[in-house]
Figure 1 (tube, rainbow, N blue to C red):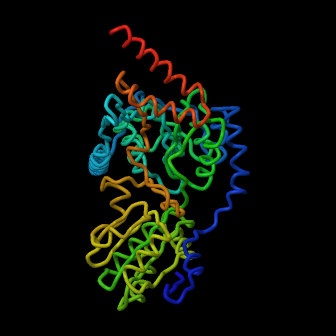
Figure 2 (figure 1 turned 45 degrees about the vertical axis):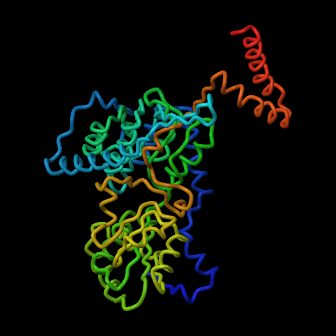
Length: 437
């Protein structure tokens, strides 16, 4: 890993460190566009063809109705782990339910905002180099709480054309209605356009590789009329440590994200002096060599880096500039620095809080903004599956009080019909009063 000392860099040099490994979206779009168009035209047949081409699996059936599938058999300890994760994710997200309030801005003028679940949603659960049933929980649990009526979960099939049993278990537990046995851009396209067997959805969620991300970006600006949760790129973590941090823990946290894939990025920020950098480097090398996915982690480390900061204020200032997906603050009295954090997808405070707990079972959501998008996006939450409708109601007295102001504003803007919609009602009120009502 390369290293930089912030105090010796110019403003422009520091700013350049926030850049991620470049993704050539123009060439990726040129590959994905034909897939998107083909699925729109040929539907299920196209999905089957691409699944043979990319996954080497021939599908008899593209979509399964979850209620028709038998309950999968899991080992007791595996089932218990996913049950605990489900309970924690449910508890954290159900606590996010909005409280409906009615506000009387003027006497007789009441306004409120009501929440409604998005009717049909698509959830993408990756399954290429690693099966991720945890993502099935992270997406389907808030959809279940929101009351989404149609929930399509897309995930690549196993080699025999079946569904990963852990993903199926999570899907059934969290109320998924359909499972689309496909991955990649073809799965995103099928959910966006709809096919003979796959319901069309209104919003698509979930992480994925650059082809999945490109398909989401293309389709949200197409006639498919869908929205997406957020732009997303490769996984990333920024770890802030000091002289009190355990090098073994720091190395493990860095590698936990590096093992996702060769395009992941990890950043180590060392705050203050007296840190044994050599011990950390040796621990990273030692642990990386023993990982089953060590090759992926090693490639990710090749474009990752270490930053030396004078103190915690400078360390967190750099983190805010970088805006990481995951931010681990593994320093003494970590909690006192939370208030300075402005840009991060999810924060992990203290030596006993590895990023892995958020990935799986603490209760927070692991579908988070990457690639610097934490500057303007938050992670998936219950709100992501809701839409808000404003409601207003006026009494006769309310319109008498508010109406003249609306008439004036409409006249200023030259919108006579707007003004007249109020004026005619006010005239009716005056007429009814004249009649002695």
